[in-house]
Amino acid sequence: MRTMAPTARLHQEELQFRLILAATYPFFLAAAALGRMAPGRAPARAGLPAPHRSVFGEARAMAVQAIPFAFMG
Image 1: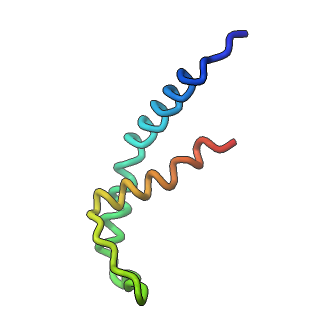
Image 2: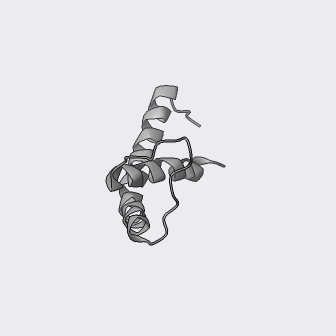
Image 3: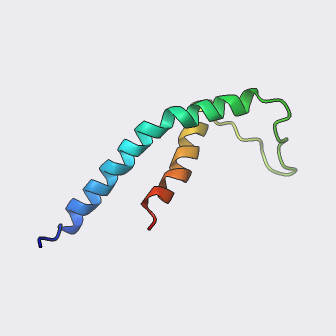
């Protein structure tokens, strides 16, 4: 049985992450857009500035937070 070099394994995991990000990004983009249009969005918390992230940035942040769960196990 042949083992992978650590750098090759990291490269493969990074490639998998990017592929999953590209595949799931449209769903997160739709969720972020719907979240922006939904009535009754949560108001900004007292003492904290309101986030000024674009819908695209918000979708990417949601995807980057969710995707690591695919690699757990």
